[in-house]
Image (cartoon, rainbow, N blue to C red; front, top):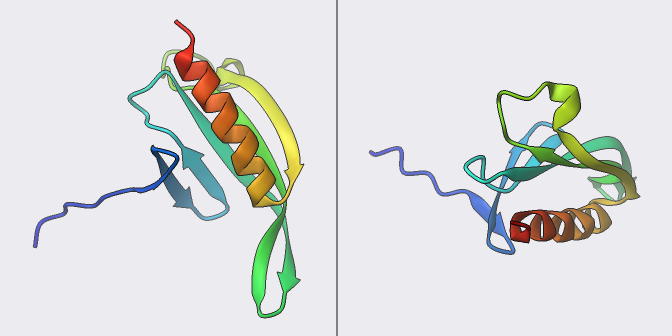
Length: 96
């Protein structure tokens, strides 16, 4: 069996999860968005993200980690965070 794995996509960009951190965008592009779930709450039997940190970041390995962050915000809920992150990424990738 081949390791032909497709990434989950959101609005045409890959979305990858590692624990409580999600990365949105391609590492081949100039920017990606990182979502870090800071807190969760119980809704019925499910745990859902309550507070989410959103960061627009450069993908350049040469930059220091501190300098890679272009924008940062904290949102209530994953939906609001994804909405802001998608807008930031589209605008950043559209700039020349």
